Length: 280
Length: 360
Image 1 (spheres, one colour):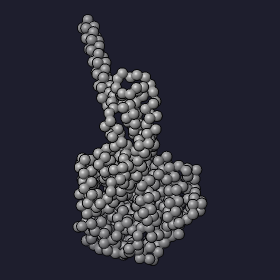
Image 2 (tube, helix red, strand yellow):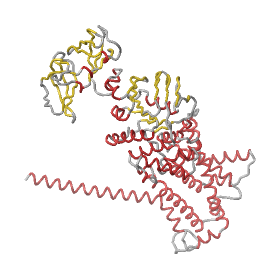
Image 3 (spheres, chains in turn green, brown):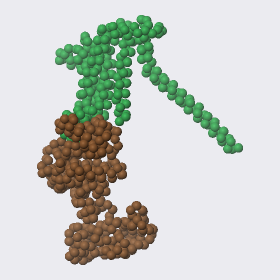
Image 4 (cartoon, chains in turn brown, purple):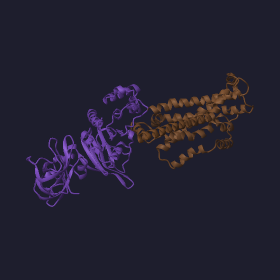
């Protein structure tokens, strides 16, 4: 009898436990949906209304059309800005990665005076707002009489991306690489060959990660690009000047394209680099 | 190729700490030398000095008769095989092995041929196009060996190369290392803290402790006639028995110990001719206790077996001699014997195998 009762209470407890678990998992799913909704809804709306068959990128959605994408590619200024953005992003990222790698190599492998301070100084620009950096650069460029151009935008992007590249690459330079470099030197490699044939290839996953992150940051960057450019402008600046004349599905279309490029870069990063390093 | 190595009064200090304390050592061309000692004994420092990665505070190193002062690792006729293999992870095996040749400016086809030859030497020819992460520990080990040998060094320096392998693989690699060394004839200087490994591969062992050379000689010499208490203890299990010389003749001496009196040949006294009154420490290996019936045995009364364990080739027993109950001796008893703890057995030893050192 007592046994029977015990079995029944444990049954009830079991039932309550299951209910709690189901409720708990429902709430977690809801939470997850909210978070992703919060992050991606604006982008989804942007992409959706880039296909708007009408003059205004606001509800209701009138129908599917590619006319705004056609308009984007027909727009000389926009395509020029697209090419400019691409040029600035890749060039400044190559420079930032190279400088970041060299700095990381020096600080990780040699005893330098005040190395903690130097590391701090290298990373410090990360904490300064882009506006301040742009204003500072503007003042400097003015002093030296350098005209604003895509080059100056590139310089600005190197300034903001160098700390990132340095931090990413420095973090991946472990002590376990020291013996490998030693072995290379022992087998007759000069310092330059050690760096180019052994160290850089070994760190390639993190160097590429730094490169692609830096490309996406440069691709999106507005304030520096706006303040340090004049006639040739990058895409975000061109979009901004389009927005001044009001909302237009064309801006949605170009925004979607920018987003597509960022996603593509991230996918390349994930598949080509992180996927491979996971295997090894 | 091969070359002799001569280390003269090498000293290395790090602040107040002496990692290497006035070490002198001559290694013949083509010898397999093992530097043996506990961690921190200076063996790796010595290897690093030979390789040129560390500069000695004082003293000099000659390789093939040439002074190596100021010569960079790359310019020395040495290569080092590192403990963690230090293979280039992004290169195929053939490129790993050919790296040193590439640095010497050999054209690709030639260095690939040579690299293949060395991969063949270590039995990995078929894996030439794999990358290091696809290999097991033992295979990586072999690639590291092939890579170090490919540049044809006079002296190969091996820094605990077998430390990361499991026991069985380690024994197998020891045999391979020894065989390859015989084939290529290069001088090998090998660092380890495993005395069994040292005995398995060395032509001569250098026992080091606290930055100094404690003992030097062929494995059997060091095992049977250790020149210091440290060396005796490090090379394997040993019983130390304090004693005092009672009488000394020309060719033998009588030593009084807590368990009885032993007559030892004078040659067994490492620190020189024994004189009456000398305090000595007798080093007795567990296997040198023997049956009382054998004719050369010296009988030492009886002993209790306090514990025993079976080790396959023998029983390892702890004995408490009746004459000195506070002592605990370790003895090996034959595989076939029956051993029961608490049993009383006659204690005897073979005096020719006993070494007498000056008491510490």
